[in-house]
Length: 212
Length: 227
Image (cartoon, rainbow over all chains, first blue to last red; front, top):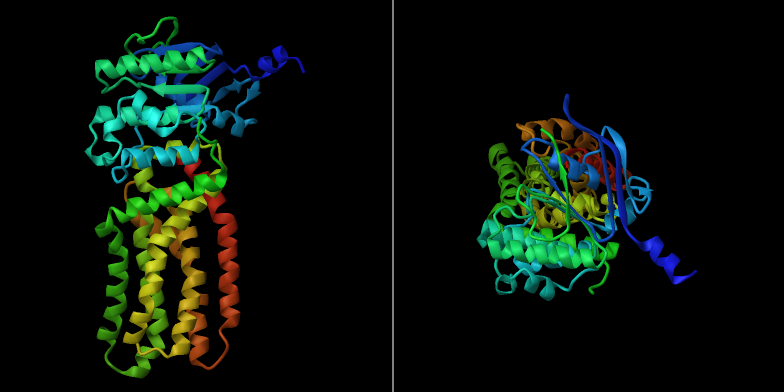
């Protein structure tokens, strides 16, 4: 097999077609198409209740859509579930930080569950949490918890990042740092979908606006 | 680059995490055990000091206490994960969810079932159980309490986070727990009548195997719907 062909196969891509989601009786969105290639970052914006979180959850496969399909590298995600999950890092509204664990222990668990990304000390360093490595989750501030959740994503080797409002509670320095991490990931062929009300702190982000 | 995670490493990581959380929440974790000891102590006090009566009801009383105390501790299996959002990370792990659920049940049993087992010989003294009775009781608990945790995982996965989940959980689980209770106390009864308890213990083993194979799958499916 020629090297060109090999990269063509491993080149990640996400395609969403005809996606429709309902919450109860209410139609959140329908006929939604997204096509994302390696190295692209997509920002989703829209008023509250326009379905940003619902869309991310549908792409991750947490809430099955009522119609349409999501394909990762050309395969439907419900068929190639394990391969898809291996490539997926998801940051939800909740940080998933245990009050009883230290920052370091939290990341150790994350690494045991996924791994394949940055080693823990490097991940801590990237988000400025090194000093807090031995602090229990209960003593972290909201912003520090958010940063820990983002750290977790760095320790996974995932190529697709789905970040739901990653900047809430982050200070300006941390927002810039997260922007750098996003750019870094995109340069190395990663994909990201980020919901946010504010412009992303990076160049070349595509924008998708959901209507209310 | 760090290592990609294997299934074994993921399960051990989960068990370690849950046990760490329990060990840092000792007061809360000790509640079901205290409850177990209290209920099992109330029986001999309430029923008077007749050694014959006590020896006859001993295994049943201890089993009833163990069942209620397990019921009390079940919520802790998934509720914290649902509350802090780590359940999403579990659902999106590139590993089979039923196996991860099994790891969580394992941690739950180590934190609640095992201490209960260790306390039992002491409680057996209160009822004046013979050596043989105590051994059978312990055997039935070794086989039965993991089954209680496994079936409980299904119930908790279905009800966690609902309002009034406690009572619903009990209603849901008691019918499933009854066969375990019947065979476990049947083993104790057999010993007291001078019969071999092996038939009852075999049935208990069968129930445990059944729970071991089906409960993680059912609990995982329930979590997917709820997560």
